[in-house]
Amino acid sequence: MPDRSELVVAPSMAAGLLAAAPWIVLLASTLVTSWVGTPLLLIFVPVALGGALTEVHRCGLLRSPRSVVRLAMRGRELRAELGDGREFPVSVSADSRLTARVALLKIIPCAPTSSSAHPLATVVLLGGSGRFNNIRSQPFREFRVWLRLNRSLPETA
Image (cartoon, rainbow, N blue to C red):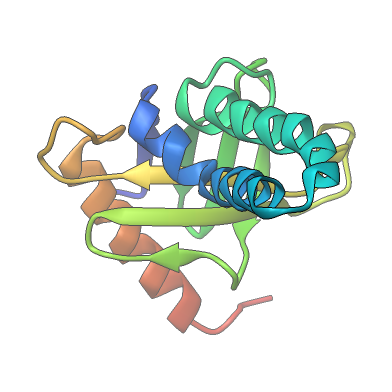
């Protein structure tokens, strides 16, 4: 495997909807609960709708300055590039989920810098050979292998 590899994330509505799923569930449950008998809960609809639209905008359409548009693997280091061009080293949180076709990553900046004003970012990667993917399948396979190998190797000082 090459020492350097990159994942360029493309805009994808499917990735945005997957990232917005918790907000969509909150929106639906708020609407149902307010329809059944608690109309006061309608005040939460704009909050849930705003959260869902923000996630689609940031994780799916990649139009936010905080959107992760590229992940670069250099040796044992992972670097993230944001939509505004900033690039910094990150680590993948243990809360992340990785399957054969989907990666839900929570990334954390490694060092406290000015780019870590928002310390946690969510990245939704949809691999495979479908029309809903936002990355190519071969780099996605390499990334999954890289993640698994780097989690199992002991840290060297």
